[in-house]
Image 1 (cartoon, rainbow, N blue to C red):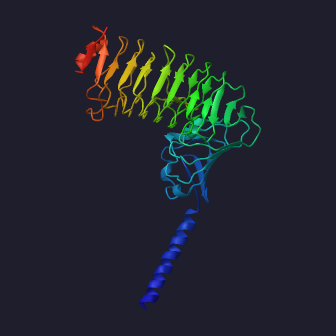
Image 2: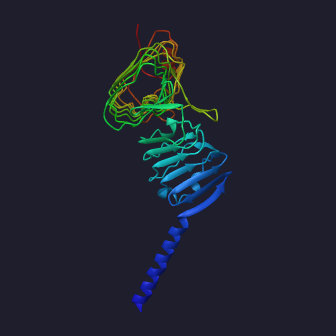
Length: 371
């Protein structure tokens, strides 16, 4: 009798499990004007507008099973800066729209993207934490051209993406003006030679390139965007050949929204010293977690920094030169915390009678007058 009862319980549990599995293998709904459908590993979106920030709460049971995303032509992007977290099996994205505004910072395993619109715009910012192996344009698209493993725009003024998977040296050809968002992110390249025509390095362009040891930025480069060299753990030497540069922000192209990010050299744990050219403002977290950084020189003409997370986990920092043009505040060595994880022994080098000397005294920072 007990065996029979046990068997019946097991049968009921098994049927319940199968029923539940069947229930979540296919489902659909609408949320904030966007229709979604889940079927056998494919999560698709239709409608007009942005997928809302809290969409993730609608289908938590499906996240672990999603293998492919299908984005309808009216979908403009993600409302949240990043998204599709917990989708550990996600490997392919298909776009039916022209452009998608959003960043898949969590989805490391995405390997393939398919564009079906003839006006499709490839955006490396969508895949900054991935390393795409396949990029397809279903319809003829004269905006782009491949040369080997590198995708360029039609006139080769912008390098959009490198899909190589080997440890190799890259020489970017003369004529290229822009290295696009996420172009080399998380690749295995061991070095890169930048052209004298380069004007801009995009968001996350070299983030996660852990094999690169040095970078020589040509005088022609005018702008470097957020997270450009984030997590380049072997990067030890950075040479700027210009007197002035703009460390720019990430801008959502369709929404016109500006996110003041930063972390340009964050997690560059081999970086020991650096001289930064003049700029209007240095963004937050610029040197965050550069644990071996000892010396920083800010050039005359630099006006201010965003102190948030700026020197966090830079405990070995010894000296920082502050030019007469630059303003600092009490958070410079402390962040917005009690100073934990921030340098305790760093000394400000400044000129006598400068604003830096005045502020160092005011905030009781260690400082030294130099000629």
